[in-house]
Length: 300
Image (cartoon, rainbow, N blue to C red; front, side, top):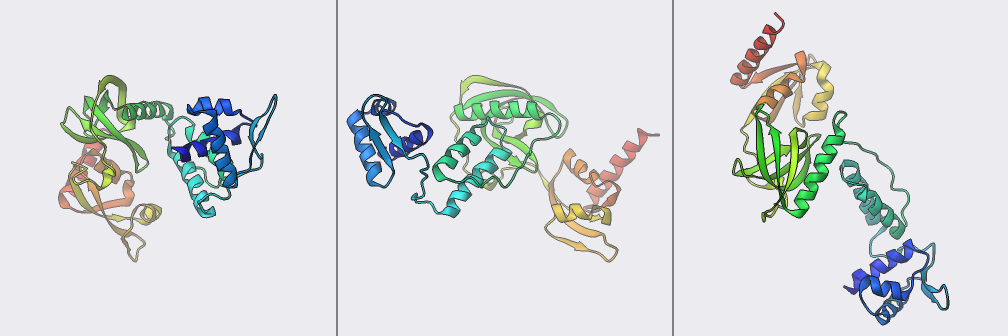
């Protein structure tokens, strides 16, 4: 515990011009004698801490001091600061990451890490999604059951009661992973489809998996292997979305992809418009043809 106290003392001294031993003793609930020993330990370690006596005196640290003698290398310092910036970029949380970043900048003495800016929020209902994100974060940390209405990919609107375990970002969207009491199974829920979220007073005792994407049978959806021909106008999407593809002489591409069955399968294929043709499997090809014919009836 002393090591943690020593680092916090350094941070306090970096934030404040001066603080008394009495104030530090009260903060850490130790004696002033213990604080004096801590200051001596820091001084012996090469930290420029000094004490001034008399009225207005106290414990101080040289204003320009940074932890250049830390165990971390310069590269590791930059990686830590860059990682926190990345978390701040994808997070809907309150500005805590920026506060952490500012503190670490003070301690590590790094001021040139502002090299990237990312915003993964959508253009439409970002504020509502942010509110949902923060409420779910609170429920996950406090292990409280949540209740909400959810619109599934099949168009169903069902009231759910879920033990929330993790927030997960995948494929340009935020998801909540948890145990659904309605389905009696683990499920992913897209934040944008959650309506009327309510945090109950009921607690749960389910431990979240360390890496949900490595768990066996994490998705209950049935996947299909699509073989598609994509025409030259959509070449940019081929390069963006597919790792393996074959380019034909006419500039079109033959691609394959594993995709879950359901309405989102048709939505994905139709996002290519007339620049895509499903080659295999035949049942999916026929299904898409039937859907297109039904769509045409709306314009007859």
